[in-house]
Amino acid sequence: MFCQLILADGKIHPLETRLLTRLVSPRIKLRKDDVELICSRLKERRTSDKHLDWLVTFMQSSMTPESRCELAGSLAKLAIADNHLHPAELQVIQRARLLLGLDTARLAANG
Image (cartoon, rainbow, N blue to C red; front, side, top):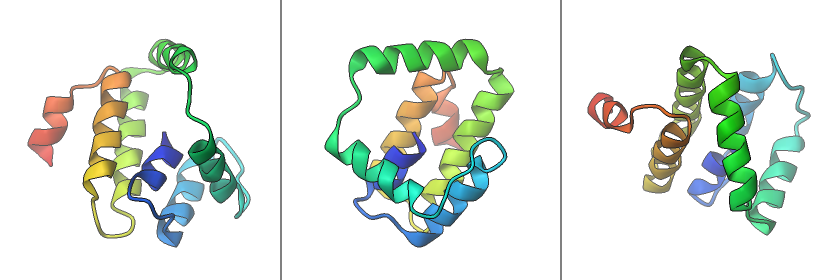
C-alpha cells in the first residue's frame, strides 16, 4: 500500500522514501534502494485480485481497529510528505481505508 501511494502521483519523491523508511523501520528494515526496487516491481506487475483479497482478509483479521487506523494515518502522512496531496494519492488512501474496513466518509470530513 505504501509503495502504491508513493507511485500514485507518478514520482518517487526523496521525502516520501525517507518517511516510508522511518514508518516501517520498527517492523521492517529497509535499505535506501529497497523502496525504489519495490516500487519498480509494483509498476511492472499488477497485484492479482486473489492476492489482494487474501491480503485484505489477513489485515482485517490480524490487526486491531487501532492499528488499522494507524496504518491509514501513516499512509496520509506519506501522501503529504512532498507537501502536495495528489488526487491519485487520495484515491489510494480512500481505497486502503475501504480495504482496511475503515470509514472513508470520516476521512473526507476530516480532510
